[in-house]
Length: 272
Image (cartoon, rainbow, N blue to C red; front, side):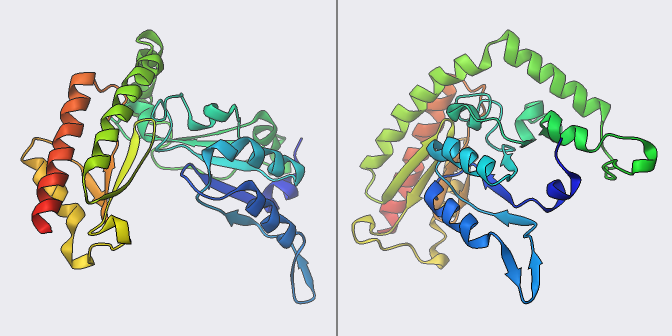
């Protein structure tokens, strides 16, 4: 069983599942912080947030966490439930975290619901007699909402009955082929994806690494143009974000990508 003091003061690396840092840098950071001293006091850092990281390095990161007795917490609110081609993104690397945070796709988006899943070791840390005061004294007004929970159960049944993950893998292959077409647009600087999550970066002059000015709001203009094609998307600055639902059909997906392609071409090439 995990000592409650260790649990409370563990060095927590909260890893958001995006692209980025290497295990070597993480290990270097841990060695630097161990022990963490302030003045004459010998203190343990309670938390440490590191992002982003390379998904392919997750297994190595888990080994480092285990070595230093660090809890591995994975936030899969956006990446869970088939979005990356597996039920959870950490499944790609066969990693089971100490704490897994879920939401969004848990109900298929029909109702708001989130969940925090822990290992038995962590869960049992908060079990005991009333006098021991081990309980996790925390709660939300909407905890255990029966309507949201019913939607989640129905959604999980559909995942199993309709073999949603298997179908998603096939759609992802189509999606990745469609994304290749965007490299032919002269104002697209990079394209990246993991499963059904993609980002298309736009620049005024990709060859010379010249970005658009903030006042150009090129991302917004592309999204506004896409509305005329019957497509609702959103930008993050000059990056066009594409996150279709896991249940999307091939015909719908091609409509989505072709509309975005057309919108980027019309807006950026008319701006030049």
